[in-house]
Length: 167
Image (cartoon, rainbow, N blue to C red; front, side, top):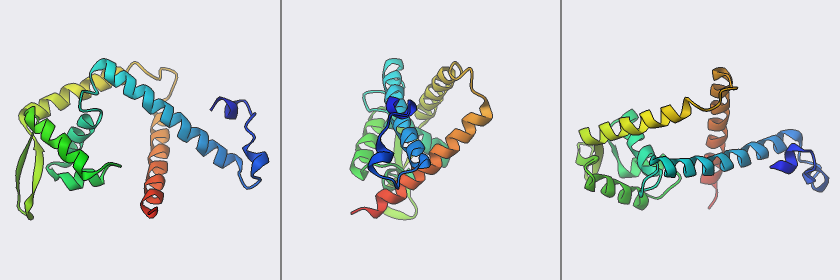
């Protein structure tokens, strides 16, 4: 990352097909990865990431935004296995944060929904995240942040499509 910032990257010399845009996307991906690890460390220090990992917040967020979902539906939304999401659902259910309800579209695949306790816990975690975020990026403008989020989302979708094509 540092080498790309200072123009000492030798990628172009090794492969003349690599252009500035490819280098910029590479740098962005590496910065996002580094940012992710820093976010995860902050989340662990603040309690946003629990013993279940960061997946608990995202799991509850999906249920908040989309309503009851099956475990396979939640797994499809993430780069993880159905088994991992089932374990997470079971752990959240044991804490009383989610519950399994009958699925009118499928006899065996239950829907997972937030309980009142789960909705309250999600609200607390979301408020904590917003409080942290409100103290960050003082020099950044909201429009630029939203544009960047859109770019990262588009690249993420690209990565997902490419990943699905691989065996």
